Length: 76
Image (cartoon, rainbow, N blue to C red; front, side, top):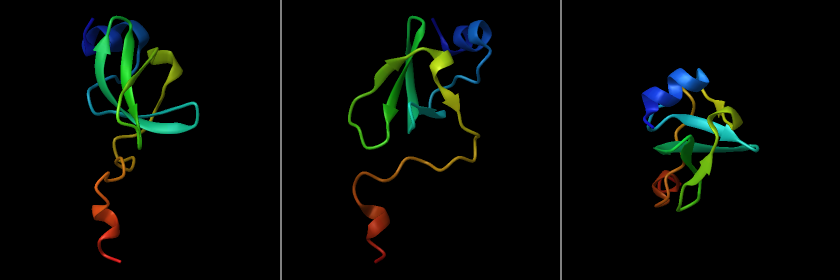
């Protein structure tokens, strides 16, 4: 399957890098595996599989994932 197949089959805006919310946590879509999308939840190292209809798709202007290297806190 591809992102295009997922978009057509489930009528969702699936793409690599899309921001989503699942079970109350935000994350980033990383890849497609069969009928599932792999999502790396914010703060996690590995992505996990989710069905496209489990995801709440956030708008393109949704906040990006927090920096893992602490760069955002360097200004303080």
